[in-house]
Image 1 (cartoon, rainbow, N blue to C red):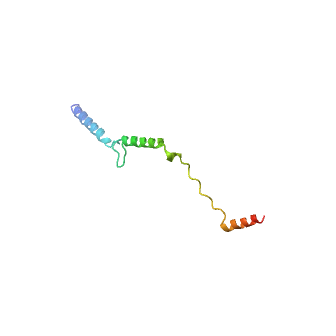
Image 2: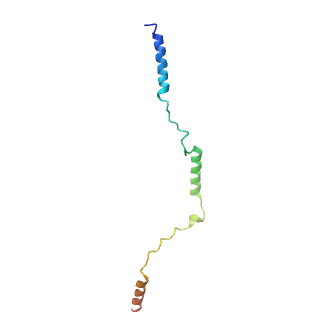
Image 3: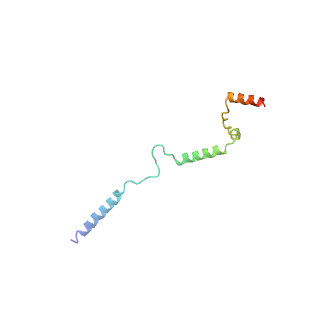
Length: 89
């Protein structure tokens, strides 16, 4: 029985090593994303482009916003009657 102990230790150690190596074969990776993934350099370029766009100046930045659309007034007939009434005063 004692003569088999070194063989048993060798077999169990080998089995333990194999189990350890094959237990978690899938290890998530941070690099090499799938289709459409951006690299660090692409992200830096995108951030720089946004910064340049914010700092851009020119005439288009000086324009005032368009005035709100005028509200529809009274119809022409109502305006004509009001005008006639005011003339009669």
